[in-house]
Amino acid sequence: MTLSNAALPSSFKSYSLANRLGQALELAVSHSQAFGREYVFVAALAQQASSLVAKNAEHFAFQLRELFTLDTRRFEMVELRGDLTNPQFWRWRFEWVGNSPLSARCEAINSGSQHNQFLTLLNIQGGLQVVSA
Image 1 (cartoon, helix red, strand yellow):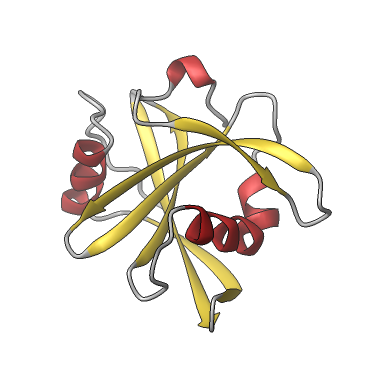
Image 2: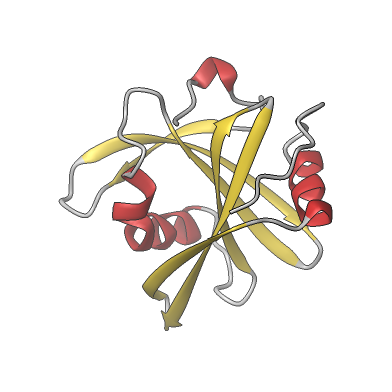
């Protein structure tokens, strides 16, 4: 499921990024610093396919790291899926070669404490359920 701009927390802003085919598209993005990491939260907007982030993760990670001028060692891309009453977080991991992300893979955040930390970073109230894989 994708989110609409109206459903996203105010910390999200819409950015135009290039997909793997070089086409411009809009992605909702929120950047937060916490726990010694640079978290970049992303969400596909409602009019786009749910697989948008999965198909373009490496391209998005490269552009977002450049946009926010982040160190690859501290960079964390986290995808927000679902709705705000039951948000789901997916962490994207990359093998970095210089400033290029390779071998994208994602994993669901199932830890209750980490899930709650992400809710706090995004200022989401009430949605405290952990989604099991």
